Length: 118
Image (cartoon, rainbow, N blue to C red):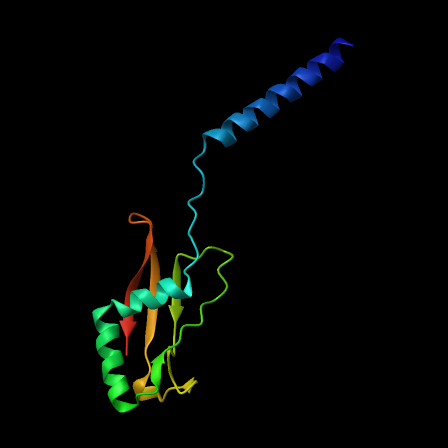
């Protein structure tokens, strides 16, 4: 009977230690999903992206940015998108196309554009 109590106490103490250690570790930082609205807003206020779209629309007024964001279940901190310009619902010619990289800024707590290239 004493051995049974000792094992129960040992298991209880081990469980308490595991709970204490897990409670003391900081939670893993959560990265919110980049929404299409946020991505479009970032492009709208990025000087390079804005200038490039003006140039593209002079060539073909039917062109615009179309962002197809990937699945973000794994909470990525970086999202790279290629071929973001469409013209009349179809991919643009290579000379009018662009690509963009979004990065989640942990310090500011928001998504930012880290690279835009045309």
